[in-house]
Length: 79
Image (tube, rainbow, N blue to C red; front, side, top):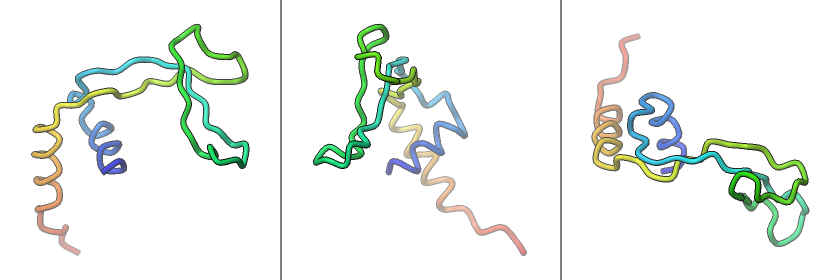
């Protein structure tokens, strides 16, 4: 549920229980690793254009599940 989790964090950042700023890059070399997300601790990257990104490492899963069930079980908005 990657998309749902990203939206949930955007809607309610309090579900994040652990995060870190890491240096991140995406492999775009058109090899077997194409699309891989690569990350390093701050100051430990290879210095080839990677960028600092806030990476969510853990969430309050019960809170996320309650939020998901609540949002998916609501009646559609009236037209």
